[in-house]
Length: 403
Image 1 (spheres, helix red, strand yellow):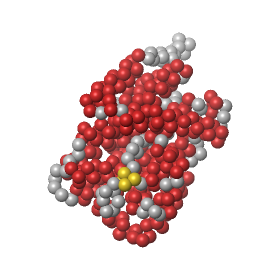
Image 2 (tube, rainbow, N blue to C red):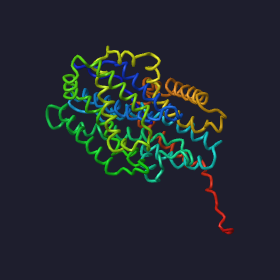
Image 3 (spheres, helix red, strand yellow):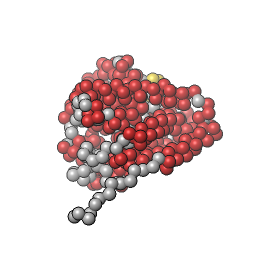
Image 4 (tube, rainbow, N blue to C red):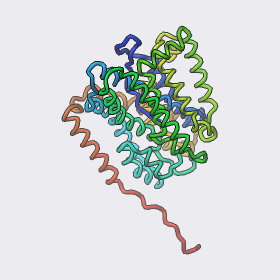
């Protein structure tokens, strides 16, 4: 699940950027929920993806609004270049490493799905590929797909591609940018909710769970809270009770994560996910407004913040580790198995952050400007060559002569 949450700067009420440690902690909470869900310890931990989405919508919109306020426009090439440098290196390293490992030691079914899914991951549309294949996200009994979790990365990437264009168009229609952005985001999130309610199949809600159109509401609600009008309304509604309201949000979200259970909670797909995303967005907005509150200080706890800082790579690696080191393979179960896959996932994520992500993002001059375009093209060609070079196992033959 999901997800890149790369920016930790957000505007205080008076304007200007600042670092908000509580938002790093929220990332840590989100990835911890996803890990516990995928190791069967927290039935509603998948809701961590919605928290990731709301964070992404909030932080990216905040960044873009500050850029428009400062320069009057959005530098598209620069924005997309930063997104590529932030997200692609770690993703490519995981894709290559996992693909080669699965091809070398994985069962034929897993090799086939890995090589089939890989190009769609590379193109950031694997969520639509899963929908087209009718691959049930909630079905745990079919062949495991090591890249299945990357549907949420695809949704975020599609948001990063489209949302700056929308903001640029809005910015050209005069002043009061924040109000216009808030109105557009509210209307678009309402349309997304309506599509979810209309398209949901209670027997298998995969279509609405991984579809960009139906999940965009989570990102857009975060975007709404990043606007000045929404922050003003939130401040008036909560007043001096903001700290108490924060505690209530945390208790409410924690209760939901403990009780909901995917397809066994059908109301999630007729408004429940929307309500959870709205609560997540409001929680984010209040943490940004009240950095010294009890909740914000708890979220700023250093181990939780550090988990948030590696959350992107941890999300990338945790599911392949879980699939490849299943209880059947390791002979472990319960918390001992969870400790093993969790420790290995964190180790791989740490290596990714400090050996791949940070060097390319902050220090690699070759990854910028014209050289960066050439490096991007070379990497994309290399990944495409990988999918073509590795032979796909033949599908099993069915002997019909004895039927």
